[in-house]
Length: 232
Image 1: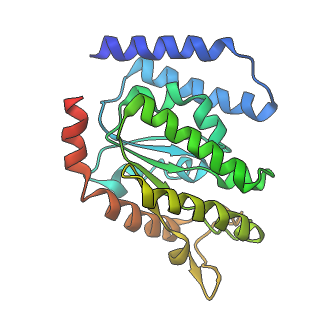
Image 2: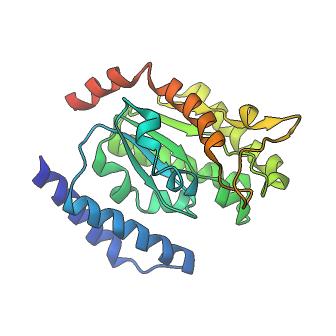
C-alpha cells in the first residue's frame, strides 16, 4: 500500500514539475506544494482521513486542528494565499493521493480579493468538483462559506454571490455540503471581534466558531464514510 502511494505521488509530481509557473504567486505556492510532497514521500500519511484543503485560514489552524477535530483523523493541506485554481492545478498532489473519506474546503476569499469575478470563482469550484468526482467518486465535500473578515468586509456582496451559488449547488448534490459560517461570525451586521491584528486571520474565538460548525457537520457521517472509503 505504501509503495503504491509513493508511486502515485512520484508520477503526479513529475507531471506537475514539467510545467513552468506562470506568475510569481504560483511560483511561491508551488514551493509549499513541494514541501508537502517531500513530507509525504518521507512519511506517507494514512489513507481515508478527512482532508482540509485551502488557504491560510487552514495554515493558521495547523497547531490545534487535530485536537479541535478529535476523534476525527485529519490531514491539513492549507497553503497560504491559495486560490481555487491552484488547488485544482495541484489536485493530483494534495488531494487525490490521500483518498480522503471527506474533504473540508476553504478557498475563494483570496480569489475575490485578487479581482476574480464571482462567476470565475464559481466556475473554478465547479472544476474542483469535477476533478473530485473523477478521482474520488462520491467522496463528500464540505464547502466552508467565504468568511466576512474585517479587512475584506467591503467585498461581502461579492462573497455572498459565491456563497449563494455554492449553497444552491449543495442543495442539488448529495456529495456537497455547504457550511455557512457567516451568521456566526457577524454581530449587528459587522464582523465580531474574532480576528487578529491583520483583520484577516481569525483568533482562537474565531476558530472555536469554525470548530463547532465543521465538527458538528462531520461527526454524523464520519464512520459511514470511513467504511465506504476503506472498501474502495
